[in-house]
Amino acid sequence: MPATEMLKATEAAVVARVSLRDVNRVIDERILPETLVSVENGRFVLGAACTLIAFYFESAKRLTSEERLFAIRSAEPRLRRWNRAATEAMLKADWTVRHDFLTIDLLPFFERSVARLERLDAAREVVTISDDIMGGTPVISGTRVPVHDVAAALAAGVPAKEILEDYPSLTEDRLELAALYAEANPLRGRPKPLIARLPEGARILSDHRVPRRRAG
Image 1 (cartoon, rainbow, N blue to C red):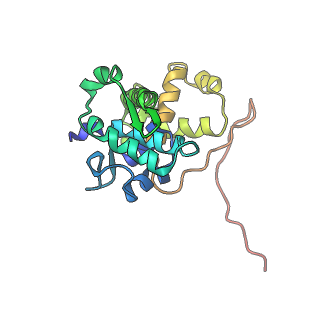
Image 2: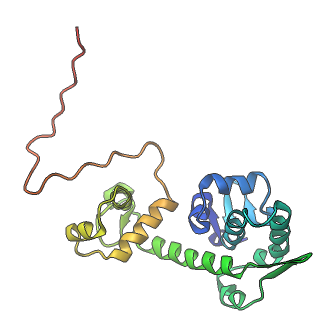
Image 3: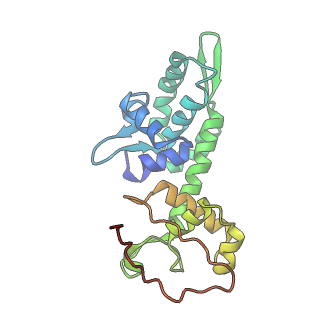
């Protein structure tokens, strides 16, 4: 399988809209067929297989484990042959799976996965990583705005409008794509604390910090 068609586990979680723990679970418990995953030099999932990850967890309240696994095994041959060039034709295909008296349509799950894959592609394109720019820190292309700082600000509730006032060259869509990229590519280690915004008109005179003395 071409490496370009495979997603890191964190990326697969974003596309399937599940937690990273859920992605690891479908790999560890072999809920996903081995033909759709790779565990060499990391954990990777075929992009289209996010269809099955989303289906497995979203249908858990309505379908038994046996029924969900049957649908996954039935769809595996088609998804195994997936690549970006084949997506349009596959969107027009019949994704119906029949199990005894049950009929399952996987097309809505495939459509949503394709749409999220396209957004992930767009997020990758809006980010620049270069040793010449902030030492390789991921930034929004054409700027020196760190992607993960934008994502942290949005996650902390800072309105996109306020961020755009500070960076008028950006757009709301680029902010959303930056946040999506950061979610799919989280920073390692403990995240930096988000610095609170100063009241309007205030400015920092000194950021020198004095160690607290221990009581006698």
